[in-house]
Amino acid sequence: MTGLHDELRARRVILASGGKSLPKTGSDGIGLEIAKTLGHSVTSRVFPALVPLLLPKEHFICGLSGLSGVATLEVRSGKGRKLASFTDSTLCTHFGLSGPSVLDVSRYWTDAKHDDPGATLIINWLPALDVEKADAILIKLGAISPGRWLREQGLPDRLAKALCDHAIIEGSASSHQLTREKRRKLAGTITQLALPVIGDRGFTHAEVTAGARVNCRFRHQRHPFVSASAHAYSLAITGFGFDPAVDFTSSHARCAQCGSRSSSRPSSTMSAWPDEIISSACLASVIMPTAPVAISASLRIRAASGT
Image (cartoon, rainbow, N blue to C red; front, side):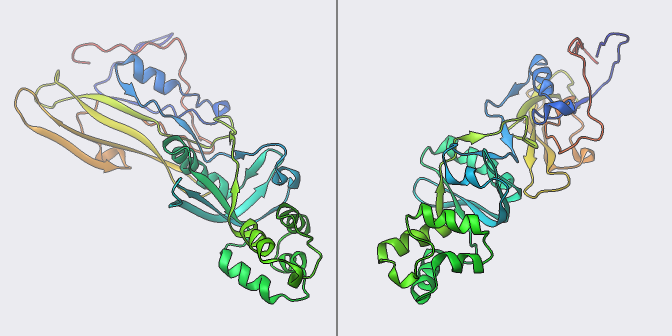
């Protein structure tokens, strides 16, 4: 590796420059570009994860900025199959939704939407209930109003009113006045409201990079100039807190000259990586890298025989 002031030679190089998330920390995706200059290929799908989601400005949730509560976010396929589900604190914002449950589900939503345009994101404001259970409770409320019942379940007053308004019912009216159609609509609004997500806040606000995988070249132990392939990729861990991502590397190849095989099972520890790897990429980024690697744009990496 040749920099502005010196040259460093090494038998093996690990490129640990972070992903594309939170570029202000120095993790701006330059590692992916360096990997490409070395002849490695990078997957085309690299997208933000652990990231807040955007809703249309006119959606009622955007008018509830600052409200939070425990809710379930669920990704469903176009055919209605549940793909992922997270229950945790959920924050309404002026741009849409944020909070632990939203950040956790974001990468699954983006991934599902890419493969299936019909995929939907569903929110349940009362995770202990489903449509049938909520409907059964509403039937038994009698003179108690839906708005009062929602507040008794712990929902903020503004949210309770907004849910009733969205279902086009009078939240202060007695529940026994509701028609079956209106009652079912309210039950659905409370427990399986489809969210018209229009995007996310991008890498600037994402806490990890998803989808980044580099197909790396490495050398065979007995025949150092025989190239094969390995994989370095990032994996976002669900959960809001420490170290939301880890790096894995795996390899599997056969030497064209002697036919011997070299393989390594995925591992999160560098000590288990195969010795043949001469360059790799640790592409996962964490919330606040304690020691981000700053690589000058003028740095040139030179691959020479035997180095």
